[in-house]
Image 1 (cartoon, helix red, strand yellow):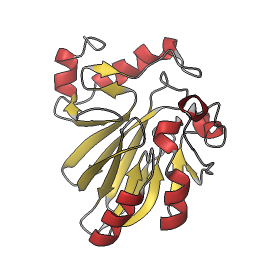
Image 2: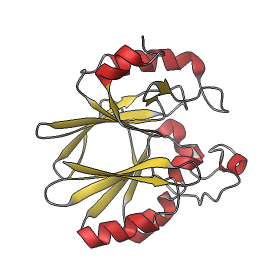
Image 3: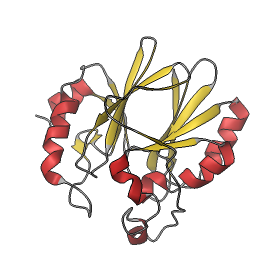
Image 4: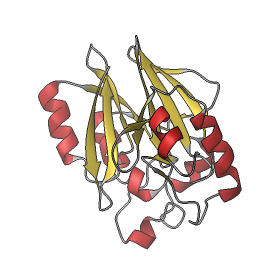
Length: 208
């Protein structure tokens, strides 16, 4: 399994392209103009079959409609956040003053329901707090494993719970679940640098 980070949109949201040895992949959280992604995907022959949305905020979904149309990719999100895909007030893009074209979900992230893209297996962990439908996803391909954390967990911090649609009383339980994962599990967050669970358990004030 290989991956590449693409900072997209006005908040430089981390979008991630992940792909297997056969060049089959998926894209996580296209938060802005995906032109650079298109060029890289075409130059490297990656078949982007799915767009995975960790939650429904505009800075994570703004490029999803264009990417889905251009690449023919499915769009997966948790059902609790599906209503944010076509409502600029609910996805908060109206607050940012940015464009966020509506996009339809074609599949759903659901805990306990295994998913796969190419040779990569995906395990969904529903982690409400930042939004009701926020999810983290463990991706495994052979011996390679990593966690897509969205805006649930950052390096030394966590996602905000004071936004419209956030559920602060659920965040602590979600963080406890994430903190119980293996120390050496790489974490790819929605903003900021990558980290790992062991480091966050020791140094993140919200987990200690």
